[in-house]
Length: 302
Image 1 (cartoon, rainbow, N blue to C red):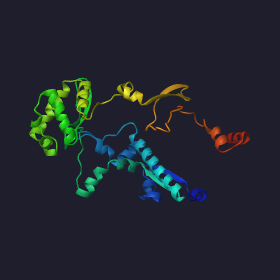
Image 2: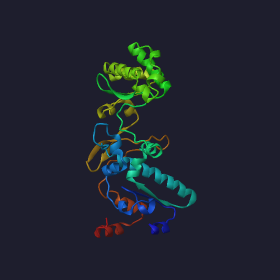
Image 3: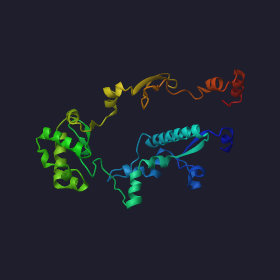
Image 4: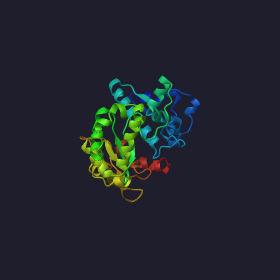
């Protein structure tokens, strides 16, 4: 690493590992040498314990979420270090530990314990300290409704009054939704029962439309088959096509996130074969001749 910085003092090196490098970020050297995968990083961060339901074992978050989170932190760190190098002329090593990237999003759990000695219990979908904030069973599927704070709550109560005929004044925010005690009170539980009963008797679409009318955050819980056919997803170009050299045919992929107005990204190809870009890089970027490339092939370097 020292040699690299001698050649180019402005270079930014992003090192990603399961536990971080003791030399760059501190920690126990023996842990720095440990292997990791998405599951291992999740487990060491504490995430499986936090996301499990109260009556289930620790839960692995699927779809390699830990790997994606780690990559995002690495990207942010690398860009920040790059900007600093452009300003100061000095590069640096960005040490990204997989378990720390995941643990960073669990911040409130750590601060609650460190500052108040509070071990936050596992939580169900339903929020404990305000309502409604849950995933509800509708007549034909699942729908999420969230009303946080008095302004949104009051809009929700008006919507529920239109739907069920309840008297909105009977369910003030302070007595039904402002605190854990209010949510768990007899009046708070009554409101929850009314909400669940009405949603269970109506379709997801009906619930969405009523909540949208009163500007209450609400959406169906998407399934993959819903998302790929939903006009909002489609019109944002979230599904694109590109030729995949491994498969030998055009495949469909998820599009570019986020969207850029001036420099829009593009998925222009699928998976290239191993070494598929080697000659192009050697020729166009490094000015290697055909003879030099041939010799590298003969030596099995490439």
